[in-house]
Image 1 (cartoon, helix red, strand yellow):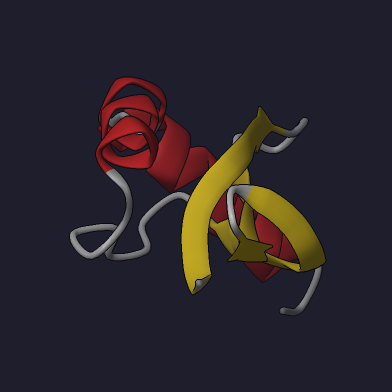
Image 2 (image 1 turned 180 degrees about the vertical axis):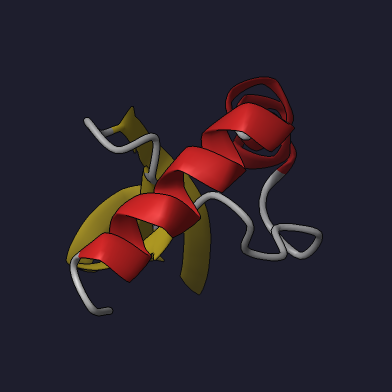
Length: 81
């Protein structure tokens, strides 16, 4: 029996308080992985994270304080982004 399993398998907080999320998609056959791919995305301070995995939401809620969001936006503006 084939089964597709999708899970967040890595969450990293990088220097500018962005949260990098890696999602693994595995194709399983009889309980053994026969194929797998990864996708990464970043949740920056101030981004909407309401659709994220519960663990990502918890980290964002703790890390993305109003002060962090303001500092991130100021840094982006200073860099012309």
